Length: 205
Image (cartoon, one colour):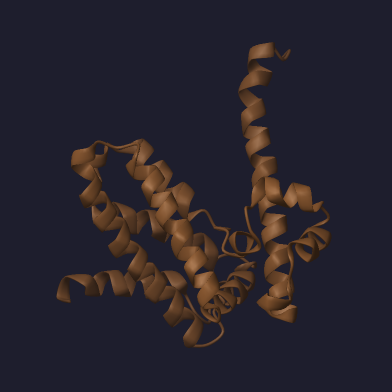
């Protein structure tokens, strides 16, 4: 079938978005790899850009700082929440919906051969109060951005649900990293199983 200008126009944003995500992932992976090799303090933006095969100028088109490149959401938790609030009106969203959205991302992680990169990133994050601060700031910005799109009457409830689900997610990641080699793909540890168990414990707290 012959391409029309309209059909090309519809596909172009998707292609641009895919390319942007790929470049973000390449820069993030370079940052994590270098931090694991040298230690976070010994890694600069120029180092990351060189490892990723881009210029420093290109780096700053994607990330404001080195730390933001390190704490990038490589698995798409943000996208899962955005998709949830696209499908459902804010007043319809419940905590279990957010738990299921996070769970779908964790299931993909468990099945991925790339899960070791996530383990490496998390260990780097936990070893650096500066990176923990960057991750918290990033999460707060994402939450604030979402809240701006929903009615004011729903914002406190949605913020509370995201905070609860995010805390459980953090606890699951910590347990996952502290209890052995976190490789769900090889059957040794499942991040999703840890998360679901902790979600199940919430009502009893």
